[in-house]
Length: 312
Image (tube, rainbow, N blue to C red; front, side):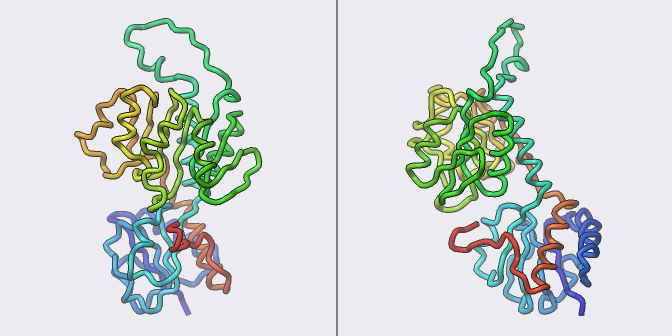
């Protein structure tokens, strides 16, 4: 009997995803009927491939549903849905991971080498300042999930001494790992560059605030390709204005698109990138989705299940 899989995402996504999903599901040996919303009756659906911007917000009618597989890395807009009563798998996509590593390494190296001073040099000043080697530039990674761990390893390969912080203890070869409140203080006090790749939860909201920003060395740089709620915007702007923080390169924001009148647009020490650090890549993510469904149908547990108590 064929499985019924419903694709529920934003406008235009079905046409992009369909050929990759068809190929991946066939390669996984699955007999499926794959349809976009609303082409399957809710009581016939076995799995939903889901993006939070879908018009589907009520999971209650899907009485045969086995699991929801998220198309995005972030699950904060799904896990809080009170009608979701089946397992939710987050997206762990090698293409998304590779894109995030490239963005993080690019901007860490940009700030480490002082590239902006050469790109923006209207007075044609000859300033032969040689930057230190990566070994002399401590970097802290806040968040050691799939993306944070991959970015931390890549930075370590460049020679940066990387300290990684997570809420619970982790061990990653080549990375100095800390955890808990004391570990957060230690990680921030060391950092000349901080990268935020934490999930958006009640516990991580405003993790960079007036108190924690003051723990950073004067002249530190902040990169946020994670979630907009991780930073207290007013506190960051104040730290930039007084020169304690040298620069912030931000890719995610509380409100997106970032409003045209937001102070970040006008601030000379802020770089805004429009939530392009990385994204799910259908060509690689489709294989992840098909493989996870195949596991489930073989009686094995789904990979990358979200823990509702933790929120990720």
